[in-house]
Image (cartoon, rainbow, N blue to C red):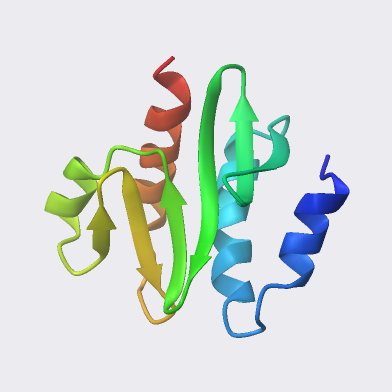
Amino acid sequence: MKDQAVQSYIDAIPESHRPLFDRLQSFILELYQDAEIAISYGIPTYKVGRSRVYLGLWKSGVSLHAVDAETFKQQHPSIKTGRGSLNFKLTDQLPEADIRDVIKRAISRS
């Protein structure tokens, strides 16, 4: 269930970023249909129990935050990572199974 703040954030996503945002969000919601979605730190936050992942825009793409990026970085060195984030450019090919694994590990950690 999306609250109005989440819907407003999503409605304001530039058309260029929307397919990538929607795809990444679909990975989260396919795994956790009952995730509570709210705005936290200014971006959509997907809460399952005490665990959360965040999905936010940046100039060149969409980032998945509050995840362990180290293993992913080793498997996919061409995809930009940060401390606790995967930063997908609009042009990146998405390694779907590995992204789902990162999301599952983030949610199951607590």
